[in-house]
Amino acid sequence: MITGERMAAVDENAAALGVPRKQLMESSGNAVARTVRDVAEPGSSVAIVAGRGNNGGDAFVAARFLDGYDVTTLLLGRAETIGTEIARENWQALEDADYNSREVTDSSAFDLSDADVIVDAMLGTGISGDLREPAATAAEAINVADATVVAVDVPSGFDADDGDHATNGVTADRIVTFHDTKPGLEALEAESTVADIGIPAAAERFVGPGDVTLARPEDRTGRAFVVGGGPYTGAPALAAQAALRTGMELSFVAAPDAVAGEIQGYSEDLIVQPYEQDILTPAQVDDLVDTAERYDDIVVLGPGLGTADETLEAARQFLESYTGPAVVDADALEVVPGLETDATLVCTPNRRELARMGGPDVDSLATAPAEIEAFAAELGHVVLAKGVDDVVTDGERTRISRSGTAGMAVGGTGDTLAGIVAGLLDHAEPLEAAAAAARVNGIAGERLAERDECGLLASELLDEIPATLWGEHDA
Ligand SMILES: NC(=O)C1=CN([C@@H]2O[C@H](COP(=O)(O)OP(=O)(O)OC[C@H]3O[C@@H](n4cnc5c(N)ncnc54)[C@H](O)[C@@H]3O)[C@@H](O)[C@H]2O)[C@@H](O)CC1
Ligand SMILES: [K+]
Image (tube, rainbow, N blue to C red):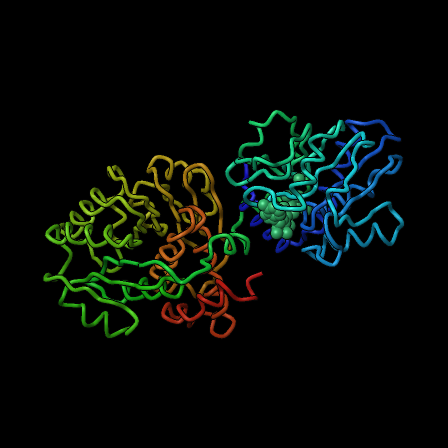
């Protein structure tokens, strides 16, 4: 099962792996044609009703695979307004090669009464809400026609992310969906087929640019709340700054007053909130939980806290009463196993921390994805195990991020990672946020390594985060 949103990410990953979408479109169109052959004899009349997105593009391809049928392709709207280059090229191929195709600008004049088969290619996974015109009128015409209706990917009007169906959508007899089934399709009466369109398994397994597109913020919003510092001061400052570089509006650091000035001294962009202690202790927990929940903060718990017994007890109590989202890193990780919590956690252990938590003790994380997945399932939280390859898993789904470079073995890169996860966790699902963060941190390091491979610093990664998230070069 895959949502339309995730499908777009996987398809971007496939393109980065050398299988561009136009190739997928060719396979999709071929699969649609096979289903048409399945429902009607050669010589039958086939009306393709296409929209201006890639769903329509799939059907333009299908027309070329239906020799022997009497095919008419109707484009809803003007060819100049076709939304993507690949769909436009496939439309142009129909025009140039004398296929029977035409633009329909008045959908009320639509006549589908002679069709044996109607291919519904108006709208696919790119839509939301009830159908607008001209698709709405066209859907009515499709629904009243006697023909067998074959839907491309999903019936038009169907929301492939949550399985809702527009009240004025198309009712299909057959559905040819691509790569994997979509949420809610099984609940429809139509018979649906999943077509393999040649997306490499690696496009789902390995974190790619599509994962970043899926998780990246579109607005500057959210507040990070880093509970860290005491014995160490650099770690919370790095995490908090990384969250700002990932699109958060404000980044707070709650730290012992003995080190608050030092942390503030690293960056005027942070808001440091001191408490009267040398280290975190249970006495601060109620206030911290209160603050985090009152402002809907994304918490980062752990960087630079140290391992004093009172501090670990405080970390445990914090997580027991906090109910929001949190990234748990560094020393705080060891309190997570066996913890009763309503919080949504992303745990970011390195190899050693993972072993200390009771997870697999391996030299190379990439050799043990199944064990790490089983560990996350037992833990009940998302685990981002960081190493040469990062393994990201929610206990059911597992992705591997191969980005990064040898120079990133320097201290502090785990703190920037925790801050990036927090920044993405503000709006993306925990697994998606963790996967994208692993890639962003790694690519930021790769960008620096082009200049100074083994001399890069975690603090320099901060500058690279925005370009890695929103820039061009991440393909
Ligand atoms: N990996 C993939 O994602 C692949 C996708 N393919 C095809 O691409 C489709 C998705 O293509 P697109 O993202 O271009 O989107 P669609 O083709 O689903 O349509 C998007 C268009 O619909 C319009 N629209 C949105 N909501 C509407 C509404 N309520 N009423 C009327 N119009 C509305 C939008 O303005 C946009 O122009 C898939 O369903 C599938 O058929 C295939 O080509 C192969 C691979
Ligand atoms: K469709």
